[in-house]
Length: 257
Ligand code: BTN
Image 1 (cartoon, helix red, strand yellow):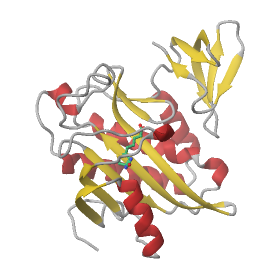
Image 2 (cartoon, rainbow, N blue to C red; image 1 turned 135 degrees about the horizontal axis):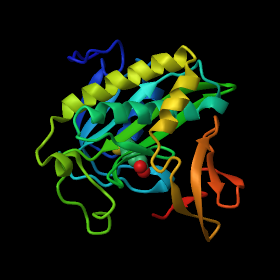
Image 3 (cartoon, helix red, strand yellow; image 1 turned 45 degrees about the vertical axis):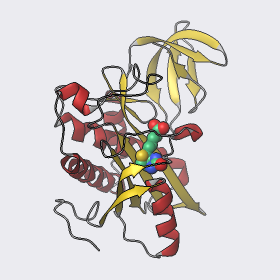
Image 4 (cartoon, protein in one colour; image 1 turned 180 degrees about the vertical axis):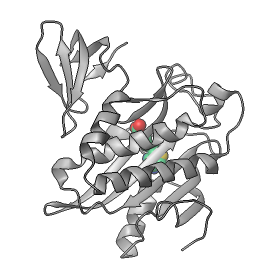
């Protein structure tokens, strides 16, 4: 186990820094299968990730050395698979709280777990759970945050934002990582203590476009509606103009404005 200065009990106490790797999620997955038992809270961070993976089989591009790309190993055996969305909630909340300490305004969570600032994507989360029977055996929490990158590819420059672009100066990546690890540990312990209702209320309050009329697209149709809730299983509830409440799974709905 490596020593570091994080003021946590376990998240980030075993911090492994790599200069270059395909994907920190892949690396951690291999470690978890080869080094049983892997210490819970182990963090793998990489300066350069050359085949980073995003949600929906997307590629996660990041300028080498500029941003945070890391993965955390958790063993939430206390959670049943039907409650796995609670992990998405606590991780996104912990990131928002941590980043709010550095930024002039609070970031928001674009359902299910994108980190948004000024309507642009500041970070993304890729959670890969391993389920055994009726238990979550382990969870690999991959986090990518735009920290010091100043220029993005033309295809994404209107949609992405970094902390440097907001603050007009570089930020110490390890300080940001330390705050995120602290926040994740606190929320994780709250989840373990079954404080799910408080966590859900907190998550809803931080949702991008919550209780604001907006334009969406589902099954090829555009429609206006208002996000009214997120189910315990993670479905997004949108209240349509005719009063009907529609429920959407990830990938089934697009935010248009
Ligand atoms: C998204 O599509 O929004 C999720 C992006 C997740 C990227 C992070 S970077 C660290 C970890 N390793 C990966 O390959 N992906 C995640």
